[in-house]
Length: 471
Image 1 (cartoon, rainbow, N blue to C red):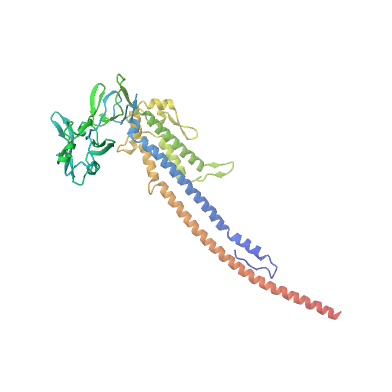
Image 2 (cartoon, one colour):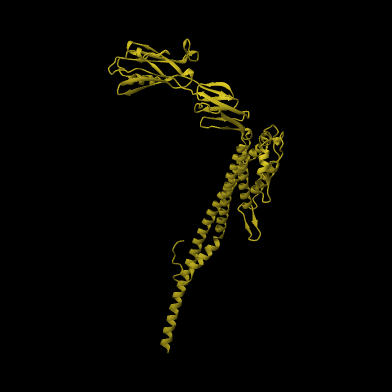
């Protein structure tokens, strides 16, 4: 408010009068500000509900997957030696595993190479494959033998330079140079493991012949043989090029870390239904729903004693959401199994509207994973026959979608807030103009009253003078 001298001349409490008049005219602005606060509170409340619905959807999404109910766990009696994984397609069974050999890749090394020895020019060709009675049977790719060559020039006068060229070729064999006080040696090692990771080295050029290798020790000697992991699984001989037996049985993969000790008992692998994951998923659903239900109950409540209303008390969207969720969670699931409702598996509504789990009943229900899967995950052409989790997932997806309940409500509230802001601006402009007009009026009145006051003083002085002159 601008500083004004109105009232100084007349003695009127003009500033007080103007402030009171402006305060009266500003009441609609205060009402609009209060309404804006309420709208912002509603926007925040629906944002909270949206977040909780999103969390509920995350939990429901897990329950809608057959793997949650039909998944398996794999346990090992000696996880330091054998571990593994089992998918939902695995048969629940036990496997006894004895490991007699671990996979390895071939390693060969040269003899000592004196400094200054002429090495190039020439070529080294390295071919990978499997050694047998007839030598190396090459690996093939796209119909061609797997091999790579490196050209060695006269300038490549050290083992380090030759090793660098082999490594730069990015083949299936790596090269290093080992040094000690006696000299240097070239070491070649396959990058993979298994009997098919063996390799031969063909040398062209007199100085490179010392690096040739065809499976028989010469100047290049084998220090590590290419071999598979060998194991007996339930008494059956099995082999793998790596330390992993992939899909050794349907849905089962085993990873071997070490060879079995002599006379050690076999490692027992047990595959069983993963009830823990399913139970955790259900508990998370109940916790998520209870948090959402409690929030809705608080937001829509009305206290008759204090006459205090919740943030969304009377809001149809919130009330309808509350009712719809209750109907869905009380409804049926997919057909074909032993269960037709949550209560049959130990999940029931309490008097306060929250869900509670009876662990004894739930543990019993989880012993029938096929029926549980049908109840929760059935997804058929007739949506009314869908599984419980599928229907709840469809409901939450619709709520959260663009153009869905939350999107529409947010747009409605934000549009109301925009209109409120525009109304406040118009009212503020009106009050500002009113204040200016009132000040102008009282300014004129102040001037007039000041003139009258001066005239009154003059007349009084004249009367006093006249009285003195006539006495």
